[in-house]
Image: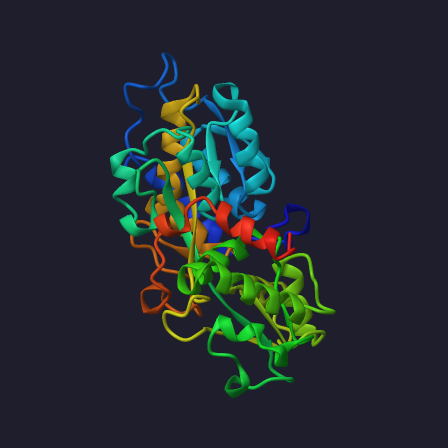
Length: 358
């Protein structure tokens, strides 16, 4: 995700309804107000202020922060940037970091901080609100939402029968000049990891070389641009996460769409569920309030805000369902790649650098 190019997103009326619900129910069920590790005077109640380092889409975070503050009185200072940039900064800052909470679009940046021992344990009640497979194996960050990788294709230039069934097929020379993907996006790294797990590093490098050759003429900077270019017919198809297509459709406000989504074959290495998550920094001076914010993200109240917004990500906490029109999360058949398998993404970056795509 390149922050400066994020798609402008308007929150739908449903968010207002969710906000009323949040204000009514408060956060009684969102985890305790803190543990023994909270500093004196940091009870996590009204009047506190926490700092959020945000790698998620700004509009998604804005809706969640407003709902949280309305319910608790806890203010949130948000600093947004690319999640990799923020993770590197927190590593450099160490215990002097101003961040209380880190909220990401993908899991590898959280895994990087986890591996450095910079994250505090997430409260058990918060972890319990999300299926364990979507959270940190070491219980120091929690999954908040999910998205699935897919092909977006121009319906005037391609039919479903012509589409590749596997992400591996995208390296075939027959697709030269007909596909686009964004190697600099953190969304692409899990796919590289999945391919390497399937065919080995050398196989992944061969695949990346083919992908690079096929990118000719359509080297777009981000997923927002890719989905727009496919919809306009500038390129036949692109590799994205599905929510970018839904966001484009919403932004066009009923105008005719010239593109559609297609999933790869079940368990294909390109068919992935990616997780957005959040964790509390060990160095936070506001542990209780920070834990309360993370608990809110996974609570029914927070997940309803997510579902009612134009995020078009899958809620994964507290049993809240996705907005209408999306394929149910439990019906998806992705590759069997775990959060642990994805790791911190550094191996994928190394492969992309070897392929001269970064």
